[in-house]
Every structure is written in structure tokens, then in C-alpha cells.
Image (spheres, rainbow, N blue to C red):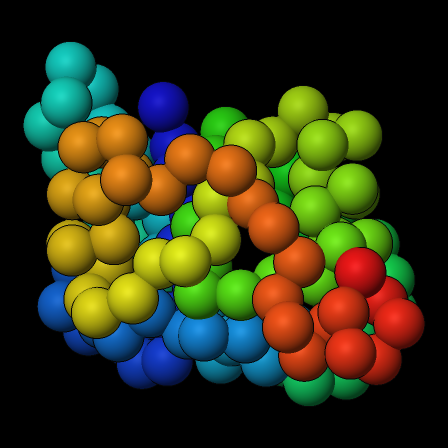
Length: 123
């Protein structure tokens, strides 16, 4: 399983989770097998703050991710991920490592549009 996590910095599993999906400077791609982290790869978000709807979900799909974890995400992005067969979960916080622990502990389940997205009519 490959999990993509939005990240504010490039510190591997110790990176801080980016709270706004569309403005994440990095993604941490975490390969997990039998509940254990096998590999962590950092990639720069080529669309940081300047993306068109659907571009970032397509980019994450190209990275062969099965899951995307983020602090917050707009409703359209959630729909694009669903269409791509990628499970999206929001509400992640702290470090990438902590977000993974929450996800595997069943605390991060379903993605919901962030308040900012809903307020701007994107939810």
C-alpha cells in the first residue's frame, strides 16, 4: 500500500502535515507492507498553490498512491480522488508519522470538505 501525505517540509516521517491540500509544498509517499513502513519518498508538489481542479489528484494517482492523507481538502478534490480509486482522509495533523498512526488506528476514516472550501462554495 502506498500512502501520500501532504507535508509542509521535507523531513520524511517527521515532516509536519500540511493543513491545506492545495497548498502543500511536499508530499510524502509512504510504502507500507503488513503495517510496517518499508520506504518513504519525498516529492515536491509541482502545483503548490497554482493548480487547476483535478491536476493534483491526477498527479497523486501517477505516484501509484492508494490513499491520500491531509489536514483539509476541498469537496471537488475529494470527488476526483474517489473517481481515481484513491481513498482520501482528512483531519490529519502533527507529523506524517502521527498521521499514519491515526490512519492505521482507525481515527482518520473519511474525507470531508474543509470549512474554508465549503465557505467558498467548493464543498
